[in-house]
Length: 588
Image 1 (cartoon, rainbow, N blue to C red):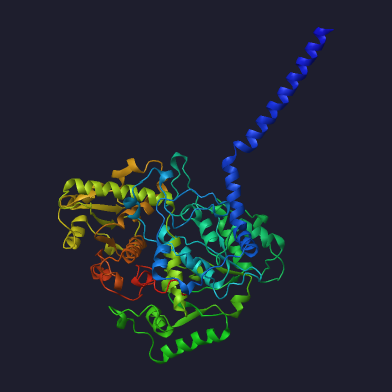
Image 2 (cartoon, helix red, strand yellow):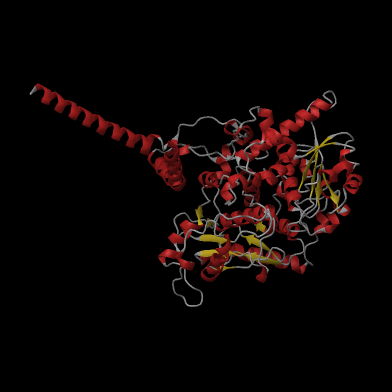
């Protein structure tokens, strides 16, 4: 009947509509709503395949490029400008965070260009991106470097990480990034904030790999799947394939069992216990064995002449492009040996660096005080690489810019006519678990030791681990003192584990800075100040000196105000890490 036909037609229409609705829901759920994940997958694809795809594109569509040496000074200066605001980029291949770029739009500002430039000490140098180590062989068998992170505080961890990155590039090896773990003094997990970290949580590691042809990175999990689980790692004693404990490849968050991983890697890799206090890690100008012999002969010549006399370089730095034996003499300090990347190490599939107190194995050193390059251009490249790429992630840099802007506004409001730029001074006062008791002074003594370089009544930012603010009253009696706590309204939502790094960035912009002797925290503040002075050609930059002081020990007070060659390999920073390192750009 007609009624039956109408019901049947209605049923089929209803069935079709349900099917369409189901299809729409499926599509939205798996495509539209996962746009973020799709972008992530695209970025992962680009991270793994960017160079290959780009190389194939260039081979199929060759571009005529001018030779590097044809660049004018003006062209190079344009290349060095840092992109502060960033701009949308629709080129899929180039869709990655440019390390030289700094955009704070996603982090709540600041938006003013001056406020952003206040924290920028790095440069964008495209010609550096194509440099490859003489030992890098893109067509050869992939070789790896693994390492155990330092067991100390963040700045000790950072120093060791910078060193292994420079070593991995110098050796032409793929660097294996350790699993994410809780780090010493960086384990605050309240309010469900992140408390397990990898190095990618502090630096734009994915961009480093994309932007540099000679650098390859891999996670520990990927590395173990690619080598150990394929039976490629052999036990040193038996010569048989050896697998990770429990066949585990994902060690993220396994802090309590991490030692098992390191014990395993020590047994299946080539381990060299290079001790920075005893030797320099020396790299020849080429992979030719003759250049290795050149380094050995240079070292012997210095020994025959009574060794290096570092005092001759106080106030008298060696030119950065000086002959290698002169540069070696300055960098050697009191060491009498070279640690050379010899043929045995070169042949090893995996080289491993330990952090193991029983063997006194620890890379607690500045990369530039431990790694020596026969080629001065490679030496300066390594120093620029660390400066330009191991700067903190945008979220941190932007938070620092907001705090610095707020401090400057406060300083200006107190005396606009006298201080129109909002200049402030800064301290780092270490009070916590610090073994150097000579630096643990009362606030009144800190004032007495520093007052001659500070301006009475000035706004002063204090970076400190001292929670009792009453301790600082003797300083508050003379200065308008402020702390990071005073600016929490401009850093809402920032993981509190980042506060120490934020403190460093803010303190680094003080007109005058007083640090704590033997503190690597104070040391890195001085290095960032050195980078900034060099970039902006601030008084004293020619010799790498700055308006930085130590309130203790007193014999260190003025040590940053004159050029001093490398002495202690970790306790403080030296001008050789930032002085004239932009020399020879484009020539390498």
